[in-house]
Length: 55
Image 1: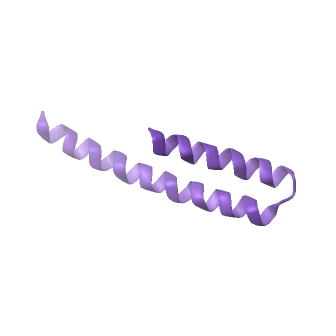
Image 2 (image 1 turned 135 degrees about the vertical axis):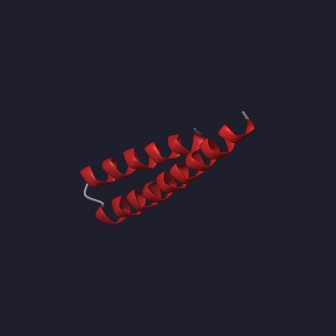
């Protein structure tokens, strides 16, 4: 769950940067957050598949 926490942190940073008008920084934070989110989803699906096989 640590990876999901970092994703949410980068989302908050992106929103704060967007509010203050730092559009380039906000875009970078949003991009990093998106990458972390997709990594989290892939690892979650892998853990579900391998977790069910052990029984």
